[in-house]
Image (cartoon, rainbow, N blue to C red; front, top):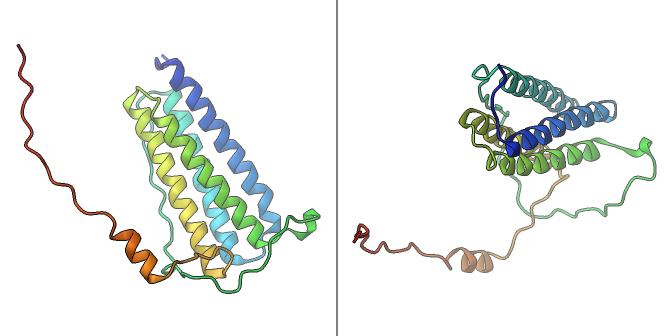
Length: 190
């Protein structure tokens, strides 16, 4: 017997599954434009994981209690590189033939960022705890996949991290201090 889900859950699951299909299809379109073997490995690994995650969610909604949230295990490559190193100008490609590894990685990153946001919002609409957990884990997985792609881009110089002067950073970070806890009293009912 099919699970009883609320209207919000059904619509959110529909959006998440449609987005997952679109992401898998988008990544498959990128494959012929990927030249760097490291990026191709990341792309292939992520397509495989996204397909497994899709199948897991479909199984969960069709056979209540059978699915489980599976975390994505990214490969950590190196520490982030901070600062700008003569970044070049960016313009849209004038033809499909101009697509390169930077374009592929940037498209992957954007896909994961928007999917992470959408999935977290979807999880907030779920009443079913199992479905909620799976969608929450999906948001975390997208964030992990995004970071894996971002690391690749950062190491290749495709995604540079601007910094501020140390004085400005220090001033901003030291603006905050710990809060003090007042005494908490139980509410008195009359």
